[in-house]
Length: 125
Image 1 (cartoon, rainbow, N blue to C red):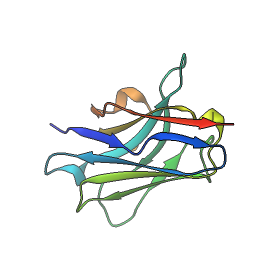
Image 2 (spheres, helix red, strand yellow; image 1 turned 45 degrees about the horizontal axis):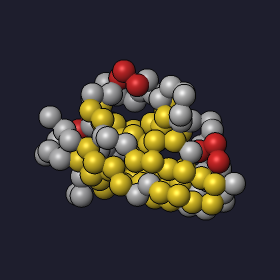
Image 3 (cartoon, rainbow, N blue to C red; image 1 turned 30 degrees about the vertical axis):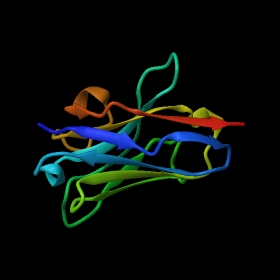
Image 4 (tube, rainbow, N blue to C red; image 1 turned 90 degrees about the vertical axis):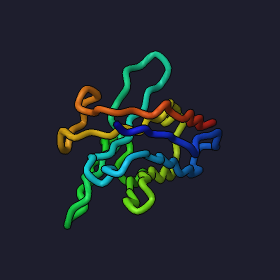
């Protein structure tokens, strides 16, 4: 069982930055692929970024909409995954969710086993 708690959301002007954090409970954090998803009002939850579980090589993937602006990272010693968001746009406004999965490097919502409660990010124009 893994519990995830996100933090770091808020209101920011377009062009600004935020860093989201997701703290995980449990001793097996490093065994999980970690991902960030987001859900805008009236839209389905969508993939934003993932990072592979602990290994010799770090593998990340980003949605085209955030590539070059967002960076995902993890600190296994702190059981925490981060999402650094730069050059934010109004269309980035959404609830951002942290997720953990054992299915490998996947981008589907159903591929992830554990979810946080979400943190609101609002970008004003």
